Structures are given as C-alpha cells and as structure tokens.
Length: 216
Image 1 (cartoon, rainbow, N blue to C red):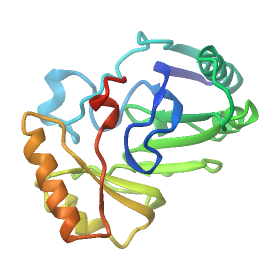
Image 2: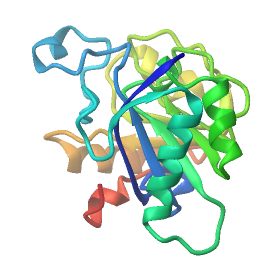
Image 3: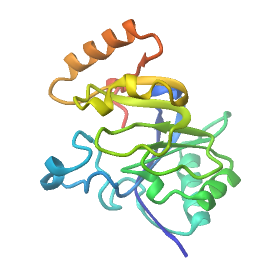
C-alpha cells in the first residue's frame, strides 16, 4: 500500500492567483525534485528561491498516511474541524513538489469525500487525470513537462533567459500570473512585476495576500 508523506495540512484562504480568497485545505506533501529543502544544498539546487519548509512530516496535522482513503479522511477531518458552512470544499495539493506523491487514486479519494482538487506544481511531472485545477510554476533550470492547465504562475524576476515570461505565452493556460519573488528585494520585485503587467496585459500580477493579512 502506498504511504503518503505530508508535511502539513491546514485550512486557510488561497492567497495567490485566480483562486485568491477561496477557503481551502492546504495539503503540503513532503519532498521536492528541485531542492532537498536543506540550506546547505540551496546554492546548487535547480530551484534556489523557495521560501517553503517541506522537509519531514512534523508540521501542523502532518504525518504519514496509509493509502488514498486514509489521506482523504484526514483532509476531510481537517476541513470539518474548521466548521465550514456552505460552499464546495476545496483542497490545494502543494509542496515541495506534490506530483511526486499525488496520484489518481488519491485524487479520486479526495473527490469521493466531497472536495474539488487543485494542485500547485513546478511542472516537471505530468499531472494525473481528475484534477479540477492545475497551477504550474515553472523554474528556469528545470524541463517543463506540464504545458497546459488553468494557470501559469511565474516567479518574477528570474534572470535566466529560459524563465522570461515571453517563453511561456504560447502554452495552453487560461490565466498567466507574475508572482514577485519574495526575497530581500521584494519591494523592487513587486514594482518590476507590476510594470511588466502594465506593458503586457496577457499577464496579471499575483501577490501573496495571505502573507499581507497574516495567514499561513
């Protein structure tokens, strides 16, 4: 039986992209294929600007789950504990890189307990069938394999020619977002992303609103 390793699982508001403001369970899977998550490896990683802790299973409501039904029950329990009223339950599978673990049986189990299922992926793995929302965030040093979905969210700026917005505009996505890089130059990055969007209306600015209002 497959074991799913989850760093954390909690209810919050989606803070980014086209689903901003929607209540959701964030299901953060442990592990990534572009960085070990250890600071000693950051400088040599394919993705060097990640701001997320996805190592281990010791986060809020994290753990190891035996099979898709066990995982789905856990997600449903986390959602129910927040006493929601009305609306369609939504789970965002994220990481790290969720597609290292998220598979069709897990998606089916989550849908069977009432959830719309979304994923936030770096796009280096092809998404399984059954997802309701696919958000791809490409990284410069990684080969992009998932070239269609609901939204493409590009961290900006990235210096490499392969990670410029123009490289992705012909892909099959409904929405194109620039996400200002969250680092020591955040204010400048926001200004640069806003200026780019004003000159290139295909792209829209995505801010991490959950951080602005103090949500996880």
